[in-house]
Length: 258
Image 1 (cartoon, rainbow, N blue to C red):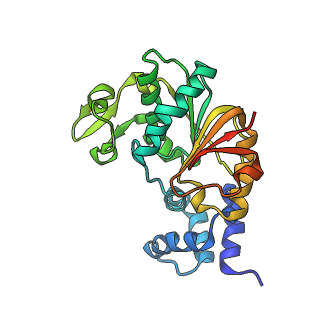
Image 2 (cartoon, rainbow, N blue to C red):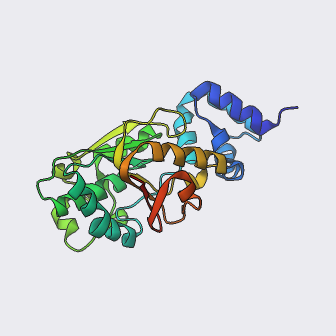
Image 3 (cartoon, one colour):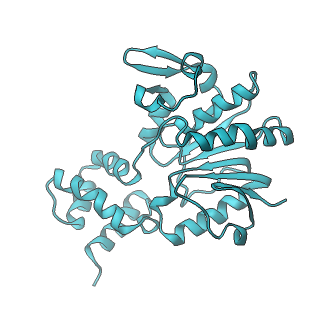
């Protein structure tokens, strides 16, 4: 007999195309429990029927399962390494490297890379592709208006150089925005959008099953140009990186062998 949760997964996939099989079950159960209580349902089957009848609540469901938590220069020491070592090396190979911020959430990561590029090449005109499954998060990112707490790790001078105060918040300047293109994309199901010299996928795969992670890292490898770099999150070390074809440059930076 199919379980309540398996029924929910199958029905949600049919309704929305969203594949919960690739996400860790305990994390999803924990995240959805309070949401289910808030709408007065006691089982996953009931919750599915609620969502089917009230599609306006699907946004809340997506936000809860994909959790958008981000900030500029998250893990500052890693971005310092990116700016001092890896991006300069990529720029020597290609003055306009193809860059993809995969699972970009509300855009801070992509804008962080854009600011670093402007520091390295003040008239930089290349494009950064930034994708996410959450359309609402992408709308927030495209607006570029952020509360002060998200800017706490900015290097000295960046706030004045790249942001404009707007009420209690800060709006990213147009010259940074111009470098980033936001697009909806499901990492687990959609075709990858080309090949890249740098792919950032940080604090995303921690929510995936081991099988989904393995599949995703193989696809990232295939989506990198020879010598291209994959930059992962601070808790997402790839322990079988060499088997996948990567060279470990340092923790959380992996280069496709040439």
